[in-house]
Length: 491
Image (tube, rainbow, N blue to C red; front, side, top):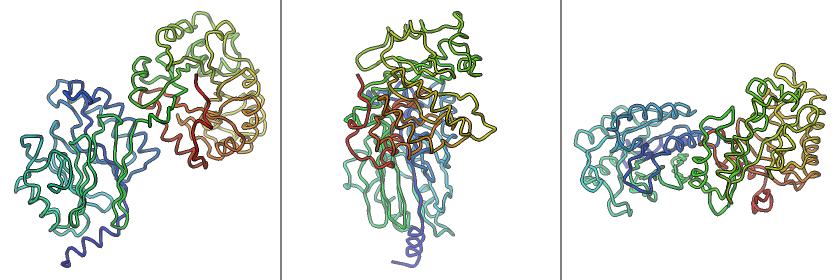
């Protein structure tokens, strides 16, 4: 090995970087591929951004082309701006390159001590590609006066010929790979082939062909580069259908806090995302009270006596229930207690629902300016017991009432709350919507035999049934058994 290559290898060995890779969104509605779900590509991308920011924490995110399905469509620019607005929410820097369905420019960018070099290559028949002599020369320009690691990015599949089952490749792949070996390009990443392929190593170069996001189960890739070792993980946005998971807390278009949920579209997404069922649970307070009375907590301070007939939208919710309820889709309510311990629910409406989530969205003295006191803790337990005695199935987002005021949940409440849940046979909801469930509370509930309910508390489509966080939390709390042993059964 010559001295230059030794330097390349030494630099690579000293890097520790995590990459997230997303490829082939095909955003649009005109795809000729029946398996391509380009019509929900923006929802899938939002879901990935949530996942990466909250669970994966990559150093760099790479988007490897075919962002749009038809770059010539009239609304292509609008779609691209929408995609960019989603990607801009990433907490990591990102690089986006064009595919054969896109247009764009080649880049060379240094991030986290790695030089990323992208290529836009000539299309060839059979969804193949070729690299021009001018672009091959870009490898040498990238290496000039630079001894660090280089990663080659291209949309089209680039793999050592005969080393994979991918049906597409570069017509001059051997020539490209020879130059990469010579100049110490240690990693090549491509997309294009929606199934993806196994990692291939040829000499000092590793080749990764990432799968396409647009086809179920909506995969993306995570790569850890640590001391010269490359570890690749396939992740999926859809849940494992074998787990038979149900999302027991989803809102509707009637919620004041709704983003883009529409019931019929949410039901379709649940199928795409591997769920066995879902439950719509609208805020009863938002169905009985107008916005101001709900948000200023008049509903909690004065109870149902303050509700006005003209604001009552329960009939609209029941219409949704009668239209869409089926064996795998149920409708319930998310119900608060007022500060006197009475449900925000008319007795005449209770008979229409057999699934009630209890929630606490406020306490009489809790606010953002003064740290929670013993009285706040006592009020919490008092109102909670008055809520649970009403035959509540699930306690929604325990302790989020404290988090919403900017405070950490008082740990001294954890055991008392778990005991109350066990006493009244009520499940504890694991819920990450603007919330971080305390892992210690989960441990206590596991030890006390309290059942759990998984809820996305979805207010937008991308949140529906994304239980990667929930399963990770249960694992962190020490659970590694059969989920049916700890989850609340669904009818």
